[in-house]
Length: 177
Image 1 (tube, one colour):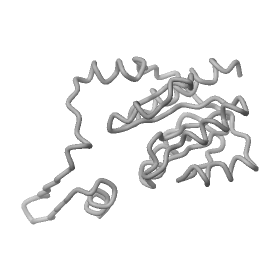
Image 2 (image 1 turned 90 degrees about the vertical axis):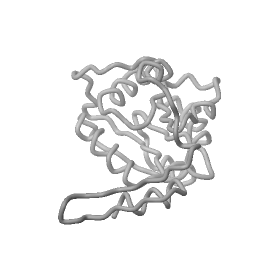
Image 3 (image 1 turned 120 degrees about the vertical axis):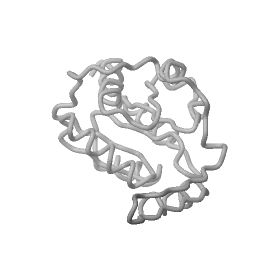
Image 4 (image 1 turned 135 degrees about the horizontal axis):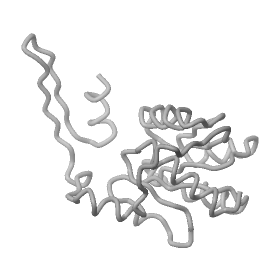
């Protein structure tokens, strides 16, 4: 049900899944603007070659997650908690994130760049003003939306638990926290 609804809703594509006695059959039509052709090594180079390191933890950290896709947000929350984050506040829009920041002081943040018709750049500006480190997350090649004035690490979706923790630790270290 989730895939069947999310591809048309989130991407404007089509999906048809049937559960027959002989097995599962699926057909997906995803608009070309969401498809990229890149080798894995090329993709990693655009994400600052963040490599897996199983010892990366987020023990006791308070984190802000700005992600407009509920299922992705829930998955990232589980990843962050699995790496030891103590508190994870999640917001689906820049406005909601800024409201949460009025009463919440995170140690760091994860910002999905593209939030539907909005971006997380206003949140990045506020975090920068407060000297709170953050990581940008991009999908569909939208890293061009990140102004170079932000010195934040950028990771690509889909998320990798260890790469995410490593990027957050890098941002925290860069900020001198």
